[in-house]
Amino acid sequence: MDASSNTVVVTGFGPFRQHLVNSSWAAVKELSKLGLGSEIDLYIAELPAVYQKAKELVCAIWATRQPHLVIHVGLASASRATILLEQCGKNKGYKERDVCGFLPEDGCCVSEGPERIESTINMKRVWKNLLTEGIDAVFSRDAGRYVCDYTYYTSLYYGNGRAAFIHVPPLSKWVTAEFLGRTLQRVILEMLKQCKQENRERSKGEPLEDEQEDPWKK
Image 1 (tube, rainbow, N blue to C red):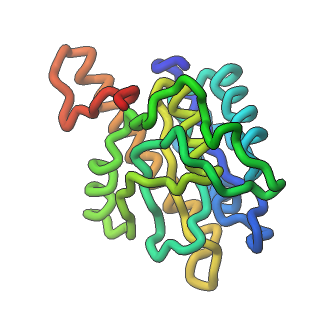
Image 2 (tube, rainbow, N blue to C red):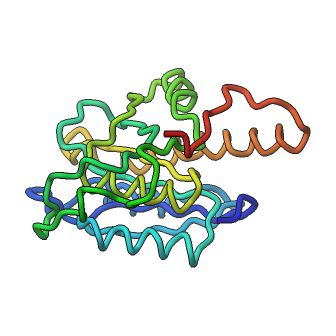
């Protein structure tokens, strides 16, 4: 990972149960049309809703792209909000089989990893800023102990906390891919604004506003 990189990777998931068109990947594809501005090199990738395959692809992203930030987008089928901002990933407790019928070994993501890893992005601050803009968002500390949570923890582990996870609702008459793409763009730009501000404060030796706890803290 290179904190000075201008590369941002955004992922979505492929088909999941009855959702043959996963709203997360549909939203990410729409985001790719909009971009994140001329200063950001945006790459997108589709992850399968399979524990091991998703983990392999996430590890490859960090190793080859060396991004500044990786944002994962997943489907929350029961969500009533437009987006859920996930603050942390959990290492253990994965007991639900993926779409191929597999479970992680010992129900664990990384055998020697901490129980929980926090994102270096202050999701609560992002959430508050989005609410002032009228965006329907919810702050969350539980990404669900399924492939989404598993993927998020993997990315936080190999990216030293420099990852984020956004849950979006299923597609519907009222929630279109285009709408979700525009919403993702606004949310991610808010995250990048926070990163830029913190980098500026660090360079000046100033204390960070609402500084996060150690991302490796258990």
